[in-house]
Length: 219
Image (cartoon, rainbow, N blue to C red; front, side, top):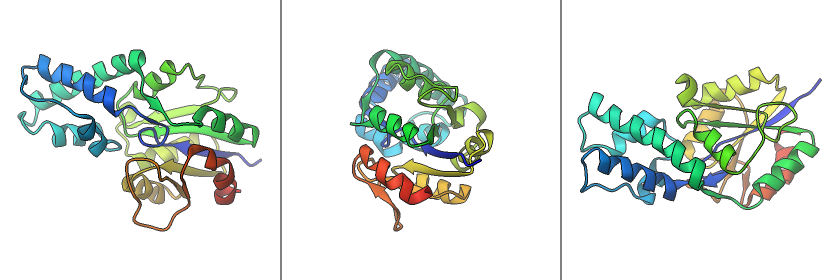
């Protein structure tokens, strides 16, 4: 029996949480004593999609690499999840409606991100999206923070765990594309997101375009 899945990136694809992530991180940066430092929305957007340790190395260059930087990173990660559960982010137009339509068309919906543990759950909690079973809108999720696996490995993991016979990944930045290629699946570029792709790939200019593009990509 065929089982087709659409696997989604989070940031720049499903939503934009950069403003509230920046606000939450600035709180913890100041609490740690770096009162002259601020994390901006632009800072967060420039590193979204990268593993959390890489983000910390990029943004916290004023800390000593090792326990000091790690402590600040973990404080930011944990507070970010709590903050987003309360304040959320900006979901792109048509996400829930398009997911529902894709489900009706016979596709199964999943999320794979390079985020910390709990981040995807904060998004799902804020928007009251059911997840975790075959009857739910989002059937399964996975992230770097859960298992320290790279995105290509987690894309394959989701596909294998859910018995997918065909799947595609929807993301917005070059590293999403590269991970998808490495995982062995076709890629759809969310062209409204944070990045460009250095390859000719199927793309969407708005989320609702997926109901046309997904069948063209995986049947």
